[in-house]
Length: 360
Ligand SMILES: *[C@@H]1O[C@H](CO)[C@@H](O)[C@H](O)[C@H]1NC(C)=O
Ligand SMILES: *[C@@H]1O[C@H](CO)[C@@H](O)[C@H](O)[C@H]1NC(C)=O
Image: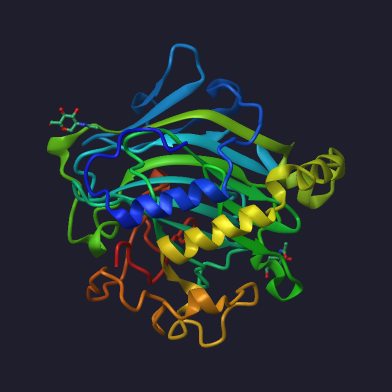
């Protein structure tokens, strides 16, 4: 999982932390069956920019001056484990966003649910940053972003990125390191996603906000920007969302599948996993909404305040001694994931990080 040559920016600390990581996590990836592209997915937009591999197990998403591209799972899932190995575009990728997320915004425009992993472009030679986020039942005014760096260069090799979503908890994984867990509690109400969602993967031009708050735009002289996807995992109970929620005739009982998922190894974080999650969050998380007391004087109910994490953050939720320069705020408009929504900036499906800028 840590393959690939690390040539530059290796410093002693990084080596030590890698050694530490290797000592706290096992290298074994989750043992989950993968699906072919055509068995699991359909084009979402710009089919001409989706390049399937000959064996059908992989697909590349291109962004060029004509369009980005995206695919969507052909089914909706009533909870599940969603995963892919992804290799991000290299070189100059400012303004380019690669998103891997679950959503049902196409069914419930106003009350949609969403779980995000979003990679936020970068300048050549700078580390990629990414964020995770959650919305439930249209809670787009309550962003729950966390932002991080990675302990490897995601453009050099494939790494596995996963979203686990059960009735009890949500876990985001990078390889087999749990990086964030949200444990459901009653106070969250419908902010916790609970309606069937499909899985999306997209690459798109987010020049207006992605990199240093829009300072650096996509440069099409470097096109095409290619994000590679393989080892697709869609492990959940496939349903028709309307019938499922309405409980009408075709209601499918997903209880057995939900139980199965909740008993899988990826649904519980072992003590060892807890240690690697702590390691990751202390070292690589540079923003958390839970510590952003200017934004949320009372942290949202799922926040678990970890003293060793909290002491590193200012009241803005940003790192105290971070090397990340603060840039002036500018409101974000347009998100471009759904091309059919693009013309309407007030349509807030799939709004991510409202009021938060990327690479701040
Ligand atoms: C980066 O750019 C160089 C020179 O333009 C090119 O040879 C190389 O293939 C590019 N690498 C990637 C990952 O796109
Ligand atoms: C979502 O919100 C709507 C409107 O407030 C409400 O009618 C519905 O019951 C909520 N859904 C869930 C799953 O809580």
